[in-house]
Image 1 (cartoon, one colour):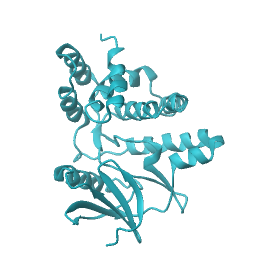
Image 2 (image 1 turned 180 degrees about the horizontal axis):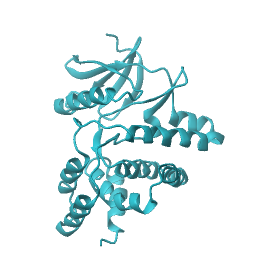
Image 3 (image 1 turned 90 degrees about the vertical axis):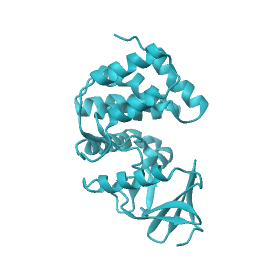
Length: 249
């Protein structure tokens, strides 16, 4: 196993290419449970038939946990959007179609999105009244069992050299309501400062899926609060601003 060809360095992990394999090496202090859960999520989602980098093994490299999976040659949708700004609408159409394809699948062995969100909302430093309102709203939302990616953004989609689109990074995959997943993607665009693309994305998804925008917007404070537990301080502040502006019913 060679670790001399770095693909990308991310927070708490480094990705390497070794021939036809991609090796994701986690930092020494990274949670073993989180590594194993990510690998299990990836293996479970593989069974749905979604195009993705298939996992080969979980191992240790120099005392660090690592996941070995397929290396997909190509460019991310994020890279293509920067290189070809005139094709943004075309890329967004593909992006939304992929997300809808994911949501069309079910995988009952994945963790439940509502359970995960309830735990995270409980872990926030929001006041008790706000936490109560968020928990109540979350419990009132329709219960679905659709596969949700949890971090669906253009950098996690690769257009391979064969022209096919592959979805990567299933660490946050759950089963639940697709509109929560859409709200998460919308907030990721907003976090990146891509306000125009965020609005285009949301409008396009609602049009293609025949989903009321107001319904997805009801998920925004729930998703923002649950995602505020981790991440950079400035991101937490931005996400919590989405909780503060909501009028609870």
